Length: 254
Ligand code: PEP
Image (tube, rainbow, N blue to C red):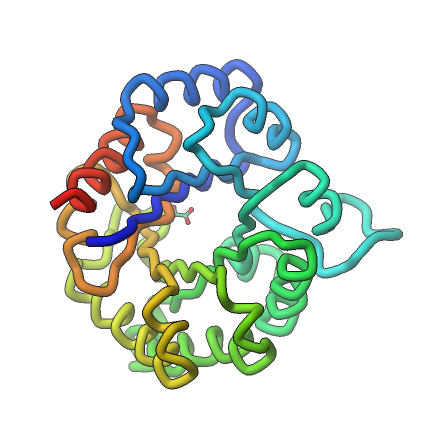
């Protein structure tokens, strides 16, 4: 296995002391690997702190980006501001943003453009609800989410794309998709990319997200089209998170 990406989505959790302790415990427990890439995404107010306190092998990501450049958008954070803080990655279209803040594919397309304009690498989240899955709409739904980005961007804009497949029914529920269920969708996503460009298909990491922990990580990472994980709950537990990162490191060395 070539490269595995392990992304920590802290969501709206943490404070100065918690973050400092979490980072230092992760550092103590993790076995650094060149081919296992760790990206930490804290809440906006702590980006600066984490940037100062993280180890150099950890990369920094934001959890969201505004679709606007600047102006009267209270509470928003622009791509220019994130770039100013040297943020390398940004999560776009997390299902919580889609569901709780009504972000549709059109808003997500605009946010994606702002990331690209500011040289921030996008981690695009997609995934179906349980209703889509039960009514056989999973693949159409996923297709529309990816197409909103692919059909509106030239290939050069997609060179740093990371996709995170996160079935909504598996996020924070403890109900992980089986490796086989996840792989089926990952292979489908890879195929959509292949229909656009073979390099895009070969180079785009497709991560799985949804109740990943140190017990289920290895089986997921062994699937052909699963290149890592976006992790919520377990990313707040240093022990668990480091274990998952170390499993990824071992697999890349096999
Ligand atoms: C997420 O936040 O994207 C996520 C997958 O959360 P959890 O790991 O808690 O399911």
